[in-house]
Image 1 (cartoon, chains in turn yellow, blue):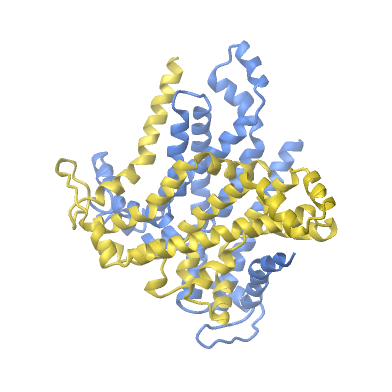
Image 2 (cartoon, helix red, strand yellow):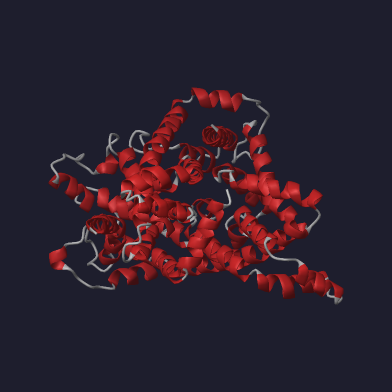
Length: 267
Length: 277
């Protein structure tokens, strides 16, 4: 019993360390403009910083860009990863095996190697600084393909065979029979893609350069020199970028955990 | 399977393309380059800024991973004890991992600055922090960013360790419980040895991630002061995107890629031989 109490105290102590900076961010975002650190004896509650962020910093546009890009990329991944996963799972092994192996190998490739070639490609295609650059290259991901293939492998093919005997075409089979059965895996892929796209910084930073195209993380990082910035305003922007993700996490916690651990245990 | 082509176009093709670029002196502004063979690689190894960036990256990787792994393991063992509210802890610890790195870097920039909470706390504890803040001194900046990284990463690895612990059959614990083994004894003798493959996964994943540290550097220091926080990916970004020296930067990116690959393979090797012996 004493042991459990000690453990609880330790966990609560750690909880404070883990949560404090996030709470600090939210509280600081409501302080008078110009505040540097929260003064607990003198707390204020003003929305002025949020007004600044939306009016003079174009955060409305960033928010739209982030949402739009994240939604397109998420839908694309759910659909395309399912298609490729299905193909890899049911297609002739001779064709699918090399593709699957290369997909797994891709999981190990660090993103930074792709920075310059993708930057170059986007320049050549004329997609630089457009929604194309932010969405098209990211519509499919190795991890999504991997998860979908593993999931479809676990589904019996009896239903598909039955539909085939009944004369259903391949497209009908995929949309009517396979896709509905993969909903749990689709949800995992969808949520994970949304979170990573929403938070991603490196590629959006490199692939666009006009203020109208910034996503939230990019807009936030380039908002002003953090060294001389108005902190409550910066924190208001940060809260806008962070809160949607935290809410999604709290709503879909089980699915998110499932996705992460599914990848982990397959190794 | 036309979609497989898509995959090739945006993942495999860039990989080969980047290798070709690394062999040229391609400049963004001129839009062309000549073949220079291994010239870029030789130049890199003689570039003191590049070697400094490698040194910083190595410090970062080997400084954070042991602590992150150890802390994540301890927390996971504690949470697995199923004390009331254990799910709340698991969720709360994970929140930093799903928050955009830019946001976290900004919060910690404030906390680390002079007058910020961590700065004041260090003063209260009797330390003398650098006069302008932790990120403004070449002696503390990298350490400060490393500490923040540990804080960010822990929750994710707690989750993975917990999944590993859950996969251990409970019969193994029944026997221990009958024998009256303590928590530490149980963990040390049963749980930890059975988590070997989870350890492997956590360490390899974290190595790959830590070698690529970039956003924190971009937001917090841009490699300053005196290149003390310059990491290799930031070097690639700075040389390639900011200055347009694409060939040279590609070579740096490839060199780092090779280093990551060697480390991952070595780690897998080490863990596998341990398992068989």
